[in-house]
Length: 443
Image (cartoon, rainbow, N blue to C red; front, top):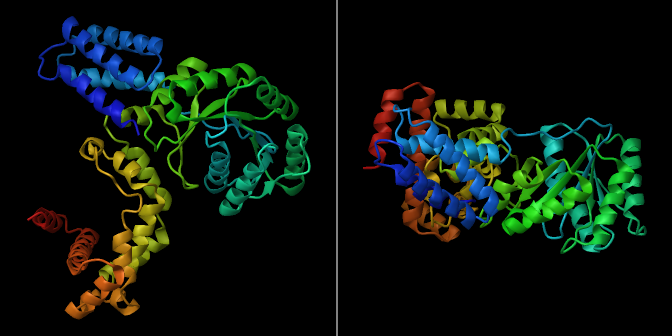
């Protein structure tokens, strides 16, 4: 996500490194490179120009701050301006109605139907809501089928009427069903088109007027760059929507839509899609995104994801096992499953400050643990509980069963042993011993 933009901004901001003070010349050189980086990311020329003019004005106005290095000062100014450009503060979703009606709009292929399911799952699990999905795409039977599959996957009911070709009537009937069955949120998935057309706009406008939703969201594929911004403007002129959803931010996106869409339509980005799983949905925080674009990571979001997967009861059980030296591979597998639930590995690694640059060009498998899991699953239950029993003969059998080399089995056992020792030291408060152990790991 934003890899190219991050790299080019990093190079642009390096212009000031080594300079003892901010001058008009080195600021002009830096802002020129920043503007070029934004244009390469498919940010609108006018927005990029206004952005760099503000950065330049602030930089020259703060040359009295001699306590900071020029490079550090410029990074802070660019971060603050990026945050402001993307909306400043995060904005929540309006759930005031009973039921709260959310209308989803967007072009075909933007990920609208999938995101309707992600949003329903988010509201069910994190907001304790009881959502109902309504299928109003009467043109693509596959869209109705897809919504039913998504609903079944997340345990959320779906209302559809395949014999009715009137999306307005279906939307109204879906809301009536929600009221009758006690659903407090209704998410209405509407038809998309391959391009903006009059018929499509009239239809979504008719639905909007008929149901008067608390929240109208525009779903846009972030990989389409400036085209996404233009489409958003066309939809906003008709619907006056409440917020934007950016999907496919885990792909090879240049980032232009995320950066400039707020300036064009003056509507906040409310959520982003970061993967294919139903849990791959994040509230959009402009400040955190600015940090990630500038290679500073996003530790807050990383901690929040970890906390969501944290099971207190399970943690207590693990602590007891560690204390009794009974922490085995079954427990290790449980820890791996918790990490996997946090999201795809490349996205998680990108949240660690400095990791983005270090990982550039590396292909991080979304299922990075599959080889480890294969080795562990090739062990017997007794071996998983008692790793000390793994002699040379057993290791050869496990390597053959998992399709790996004996060397990899030995490596996993060594890492597991080191990790177990460190966990026990941490539990016992042996900070000094743990630091000694960690310093010896790389030798």
